Image 1 (cartoon, rainbow, N blue to C red):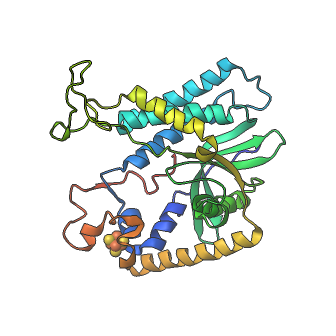
Image 2 (image 1 turned 90 degrees about the vertical axis):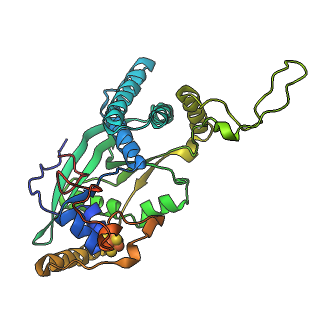
Image 3 (image 1 turned 180 degrees about the vertical axis):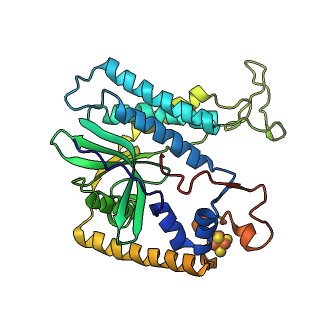
Length: 342
Ligand code: SF4
């Protein structure tokens, strides 16, 4: 099977850096020119990274091979590998114990849902670089390149989300029609001559549950001692102890099993020639903007984006001059594009 050509140019733009410039050129300047990052990594990002490690191990397991004689033992080994990889990543990032249990439940349920589907991986976690126009490179990292039992070769992208992912959901409509990462990766696949028929978009939805925590002592209300036991009880919905991780795991697993369609979706996603052309023109415009900013050393603010996605931009203090980039809130990035494996 043909492999992705080894990327050599380190300079170029990923989907994330292009999206950042589109959102706010000044933020692009902080993140991709001065190479600054925020110290606090959101929990959702750490969870997604740990799940990504687990799924990469799942897809590279010997059990994920066309024609493999799938047995309970080989499936157990595959889940074991996935859990180990997820735990290692979770330990590294300091993910909390309930999120680790959630990851355990999701990977176990993923095996139940997709364990019998026949695929082989060609490559997993592969960085790529594709020439775009005469002077630019697009960069990215495929989660995988896989082939199914009919010989259909496809890119693989897996995601973890808390949003609804059913047919017709906003999330999946975006994936099928607008999502720039899908467009960029399909475009790169064509430029690199990979001959992929589409992208297998493999989404896992995190159940919308939280651990039950003990009621703070000052808020506890007890019933009168019962006639039978003579012991007062806490009111309903109040707890003396936190839910244990094992109890939380069982609740998460039940939620995933009861509604597996709502928590696991694999869709084949395509982009037409016209859609890729339109996307290419949009990318050209963004690249022109980046080039102009670099030449003039001017990266304009976009104050309309300071509060996008319902939260304050992490660089808000810098732009409002109440913080500097030297403050403890920021660190130097080790590399320009964190999402690339190498
Ligand atoms: S605070 Fe606003 S203007 Fe400043 S980088 Fe963030 S989005 Fe841009």
